[in-house]
Length: 178
Figure 1 (cartoon, rainbow, N blue to C red):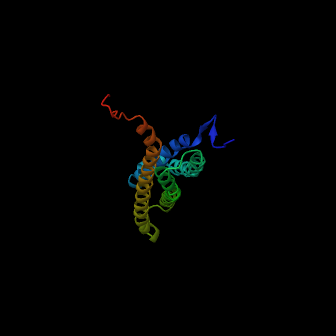
Figure 2 (cartoon, helix red, strand yellow):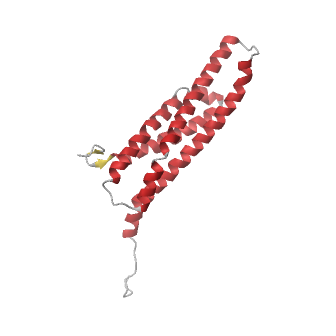
Figure 3 (cartoon, rainbow, N blue to C red):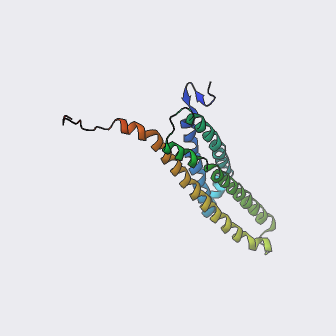
């Protein structure tokens, strides 16, 4: 019995949808929260939670894909898809880490501002610099993770559909009858 199936249906295609939705969604929320403080306050803890869900979904999807790979014919395009899929976990981990740090940092900065009033201090001077560094990191990790998801998805679609489309091609017969 294969643990990576539900009623005979491989889990990989089902789990892929979680990654394809959650990772870019977390990336988009992270970017928006980096440049728009009101949105960051509205999103609150939701951005790191969605990034965590994506992070959890990535290795599950990879493991389900490896189980599915054992059941399919080997091919170069499938090998490429598998190799690309193995590189998504660091992007997802980075996305979660930046989302979590950003949430903690701005939550603390808001609390500190409320407690201290608007007095001048070294911490107040550092805040914009850290905010800019977090925004740059958020944008870079979000763009990189999203591009990787697109590349992996494209290679997976090619691996699935390249054989099925080639078998339905209409090629003329040698005698000229179509």
